[in-house]
Image (cartoon, rainbow, N blue to C red; front, side, top):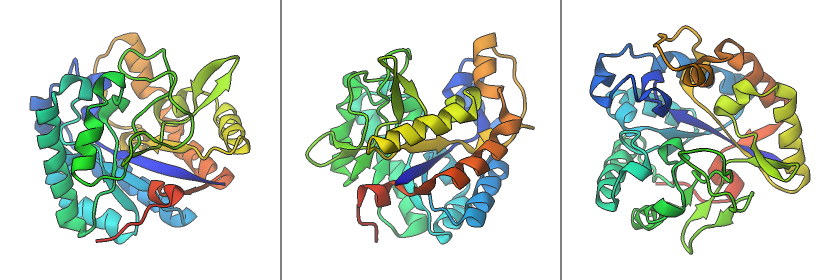
Amino acid sequence: MKNALSIDVEDWFCVHNLSDVIRKEEWSTCEQRITKGLARILKILDEKKVKATFFVLGWIAERYPELIREIDNRNHEIATHGLSHTLLTQLIPDQFDAELKISIQLIEKNTNKKVLGHRAPSFTMTEKTSWALDVLAKYGLKYDSSVFPVSFHPDYGISNAPLGPYKITEKIWEFPLSVVKILGRNVPISGGGYFRIFPYRFIRYGIRKANLEGRPVVFYLHPWEMDPHQPKVKLPPLKKFRHYHNLDKTEKRFRRLLDDFQFTTISEVLHLCTGT
């Protein structure tokens, strides 16, 4: 079974986990390292002959249009991760509409291809922010990949959401972040911090279990997770653990993942047409 591979293109300082110590107004003064982790990912994908969906943050697309063109030239799919990495729970519909429009324009002018997909910052497509789905449809997007079927996280989660891809509205597909049911609870196997914190053999078990149940998974990774030498900032213990744990092991695990499973773009898994 082919699974979906996604890369959330944002720099180390864009992460919501660091927002209490690095304000958006300070982003431009931080050490810019997006090209380092992204170059490693693109190199590995070339070596493994794997295509992926890149959810690009508009803030990055505006400052590094050459990165958009490079991803596109390698025939990967490019989707939107919003403009400013502001959580949907912190936006009103008009603000989201304005940010989404700009983020799409920044991508499409460098690819001449229509953006089909969206991922909300920190997976904040929740029951309270479902109004955002109408905005996605307004701009002709075909899918979202932001719903996390979990109940334990303070920022995101729809605990009773379907576990596999489904039509969340008449016009929009939802490809929820992947979980497996363990002792009656949904446990994430999707990537990111879960990929770095959980043992690799558990992630492998979870993906195999989902595939055996007939569900493709969607896996996600950030370029900064391939960059163990990024600047370190002072964080509370839990946030420090979530952001920095096992950064030096991510590349090796990622290579192993691509050897163990088949991956492609989200649009291909959902059988959506791409084009100009």
